[in-house]
Amino acid sequence: MRKLKAKGYRIVVIEQTTESMPLQQFTPVPAVRYCLAFGNEIHGVSEAVIAEAAQALEIPQAGTKHSLNISVLPGHCRVGGIKKKMLD
Image (tube, rainbow, N blue to C red):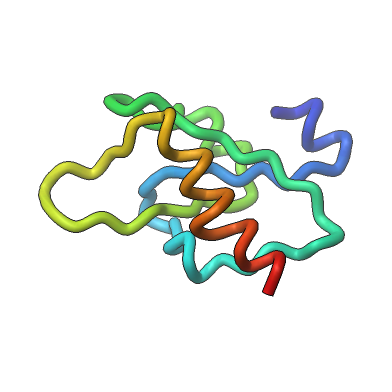
């Protein structure tokens, strides 16, 4: 993470935290390079990575289960949120 930050990337974790914002409210800045960090379904993103991140985004979910399979998350972020906003 530190190497990416040193290269100018903005680290964004996809995780539910006390300070996270819903993905659909996030507006990426086209000139900024982002590194999205995803966590394990059970344990999420580590506290160490969250501490290094500039921002946390969450994918709102209904029901009692609050996790998505890692194979689903990147596609959801790209198509359902971040990419769509960048094309608007």
